[in-house]
Image (cartoon, rainbow, N blue to C red):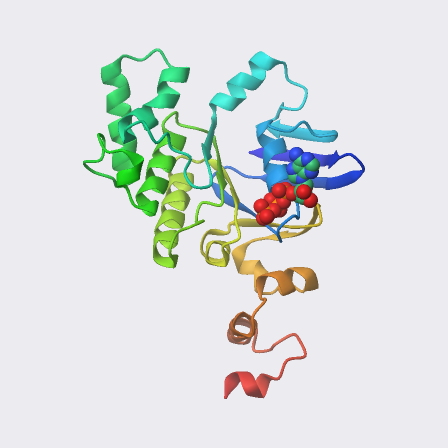
Length: 269
Ligand SMILES: Nc1ncnc2c1ncn2[C@@H]1O[C@H](COP(=O)(O)OP(=O)(O)OP(=O)(O)O)[C@@H](O)[C@H]1O
């Protein structure tokens, strides 16, 4: 579990994160959504310690990350897996070497032990016969899987994913979402995903945090988002007429009414 209390962060006169409090539970996909520039990346960077917040607290399973000494912080960092935008694999290293990198950094295991672990995680992300391949030889979806394998190789308690679907086609995106969701549940990881992908919101959004101009404007699950009356959220999520119709149809199915001013006759004809 990661608990954020009254987090604030700004640059110069500009406040970017404004008094955000949120609890992100283990075994759940916690999605941070919001328009470009709303502060999602800055928020995530504060959580992993790449930015120091101006005020507020970040608790990793009760331990206050904000005022830890370097040694204790390093211990928490070891438990964090990161999946970067574009996968961020080392191009000059093979898949096996890429995944072994965190094991070389943080363990004293023998080569055989490390290789066994590399093969376990490759198997978990459903990749076969790719150990000796270089990233350039892989498709975008395969690179993401290698990125996920590397992110989970140290058995993290926390997993941060920055735009995991960027550059992927919708079908591959769903496969990657499903994989992240399964891994989150299977290993009881607290997963935080920064995303623009509305399919992900609907498919794996156990807990969605909507940021607007640095403020947490709404939070809830993918089940609740359909019924939200928050206008800013609705404008952001259900931006097109098609998505507005889809939301209304779902409301109609589940409640027998549509709670807005749109024309119901148009919708059901
Ligand atoms: N290092 C920095 N110095 C100054 N301002 C910054 C810095 N990093 C981010 N900002 C500002 O903080 C605001 C929020 O940026 P952030 O990157 O968090 O947005 P975002 O929601 O992640 O956007 P996107 O969806 O486009 O990635 C922006 O106005 C940005 O210019």
